[in-house]
Length: 174
Image 1: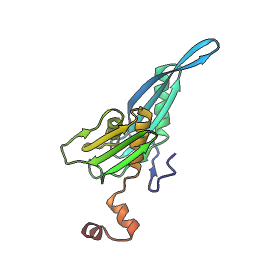
Image 2: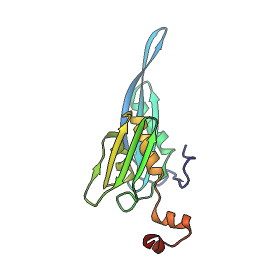
Image 3: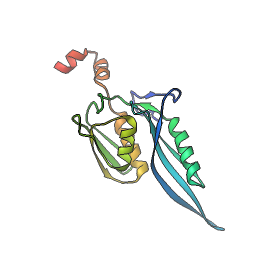
């Protein structure tokens, strides 16, 4: 799922205290010759509020089992996001389908300036100070995936220094 990203660290759910956040539940309809068959699809974000987060999709005939399936799916897709204390290391843009998300680090005390699906993902990661802008599609599935696209492209200062083959001090001076 995350093979397009270079520095993604996959995480096993064992031993983590994960909190789940329901992003959205949609009623879906399948039209058959016998009439309409109703079902539900749920998208959920789980995270330990300390840099580990995952998202999942569940579908079922009733809401509760759709949410349960989504939580199980999210636990299979956990990744570690590099954080700079309680904000982002740098500005990053992400996109998926028609959804575009811009994330900016913010000063301490700013809070999470984000709406809907973006807020759920950022709070699950454990980010407390961030500015964000969501443009284009407001479909929660695509907005969550666009937010993950931005988060997975983040790199810590230590990672950048290691990739360039220089020390952290030289990175900050130079």
